[in-house]
Image (cartoon, rainbow, N blue to C red; front, side, top):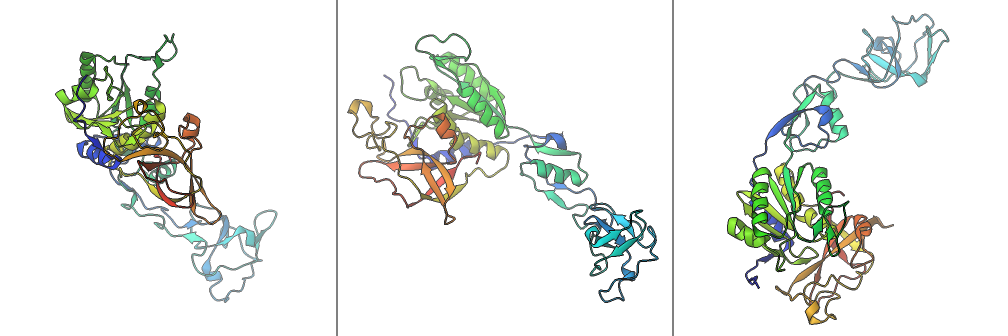
Length: 427
């Protein structure tokens, strides 16, 4: 049996700090058409290339008039019997330049237009010169910053950037994230599944998350629990990718070689974390590339990727890597029973000793899925998942995570207590 007594365990917060410290990125920039920039991150400020509007513009569907015809009437209305369309008035439409020579607009709902559209009767007067209009440059001027660097371009922001006459923008290149599924027990989906084997589905999960977070997924084939094959895959991935995600092989089974290999050819920053599921999450550095280890099937891999991969990708893209936190009021009690992690963990103390992982720090956290809603009094309430082992459908409905402190004598928060939760990246 290999010696794991020197494995380094850290908290979730310490793990994130170590990952971010290991991320020394120098991303490239690329120029893309604005229509293909949605979801990308701006490399530089997007700047207006002209004044907008570029002429005196009508605010609403109106008629254009001359303020001088109203200036001396103190709010009264002029006699429009002899007014001629094109000389004394003209139609003016929303967002369109005012007809040449006219300076003021009256909304069309306060105007009666003759059937032949040549004569008008007014029901209201403008309040001042230029009423109902926007001056040139009132939206922005040439050189104004439209959207700051580091912003993710949304459809609305893309339209705003384009309104400054920008047909292309420079964005940060997508981080290349390699995903390595490992394990002799794994087989690809869609074929015959031998007894005792598991379908490898984390590649699908990770590809979706990587692309959703603005990255390019490099999916590697299943690597068997063979030291030489694992080393070759790790070296190849670290050379090709900005970030490597290593799935499984980091626990203490007889076929778990990943961390042992990384200790030999790279540097392991920590071996495990003080929470479960996801206890055997890790981080290493190989050839200056961070290697983030996540453990477990999709249920655990999903939120450990949220915890540890998302901040690394955010740092690559020059965005805030810290997750959003919300102070909430606990609406329902936490369900009894735990994941069978460290001794003293909620719901684990009644199990036989041989079925409980010994506590290595005396302090452990159970990660709980939380659904948020707004109470009648306006406060945000948090409801734990109804099961201590929520399935994928229930977990996907969650908005946030809560790290429930566990251990001998520790009582969970009670209904009505305030608890701080971490929002899922997608929320």
